[in-house]
Image 1: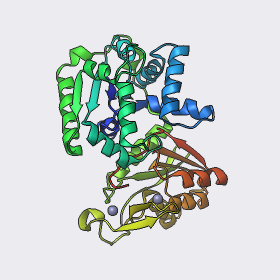
Image 2: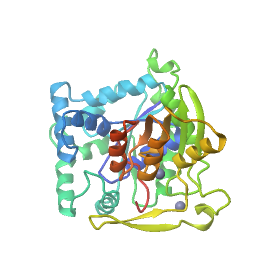
Image 3: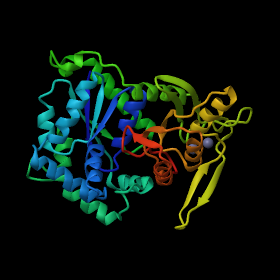
Image 4: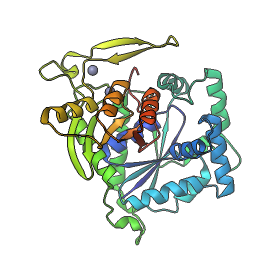
Length: 358
Ligand SMILES: [Zn+2]
Ligand SMILES: [Zn+2]
């Protein structure tokens, strides 16, 4: 078992590396941002770059400089499987993690212009800034005399491996593969301490079990804008599954390309959507209809916040709980509907799913 810590600059592709490790390599993900976002939301404050930095600094001051990372490492080690912690931002945190044998630090970096372009594309709540603000934020976070303040350049220098992500996603994946092979080739350096609780096998929880099956189901998806899968279960039993794909008998995106439509929003924004497919959630519901299986009172597992149409169907099917792996960047409407309709909504991870041209 190894614990990979991720450090690196904003927009460098840390999330893409994490995504690859979790989806392709079976790593479990623990995020400082997710941890902090929970703390901030519980205080009723807005999650933005300033509150994230402020809360992180305050927690570290009240407890210890490596408090958050320690919490995440302890959670990770209990899982007994390969884990990735994102993201490491201070030299003090690294010093703490270096005491653990199974720890490897991986840095992700890219050129400033490339990174600014990327954060413009993903358009999340903390990313709506101009180039000058981006550059200034960066300068502030890159250097510090205090080992317990954010200092990305020092963190990157301490990394066991540095990924330069200026090219394609395939090139990045290839670099990750090479690093994993290097780690495999030198197991002695990263061996876990004896007697660590991690040596004991830990079974996945029921939620983890169904979510992992949803991952497997998603591999049959036929639209590469989001290969998602869905499992609907009640109690401890799977009722139905579904994945994103064209209606039966009609051509698939993977064969004939997407069928893109523009959507005009009230604020003038235009977004592009592929409308060729039936969504994973809709297909799971269709399967239930076809087979005559009641899904009343069931739990639905899916990759990200269901879209508006899926959310309405989910509510009317009597599904009582929805568990998503991550957030959909335009999922707020669905979140409000679920709340008003009394459907419980949970996330494994507070991050947003990223894909091209969203
Ligand atoms: Zn498509
Ligand atoms: Zn949908």
